[in-house]
Length: 98
Image 1 (cartoon, rainbow, N blue to C red):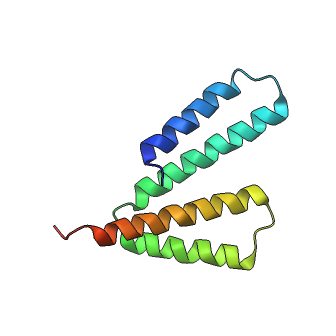
Image 2 (cartoon, rainbow, N blue to C red):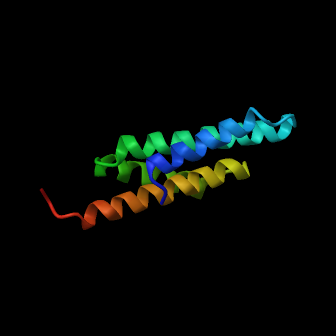
């Protein structure tokens, strides 16, 4: 799982690339991916220390996948966010209590 800083840096690089591209379709795709990475970073930051939020997000993401997601890009995002949430919850379980 990428860290919040890594996700934000990647999103920033994509936004910088967008400003140097003339192809409107490619611009749109890169800008969309930058937004998705930024949203993942924010979701991670908000829930990293809250196991209850992580568990709720895991249930929600699994439910979305089970119901079916028609848009391939959206499905990939939900799968990535599910993997992030599961990894964060697993890492919280390994940490000794304060």
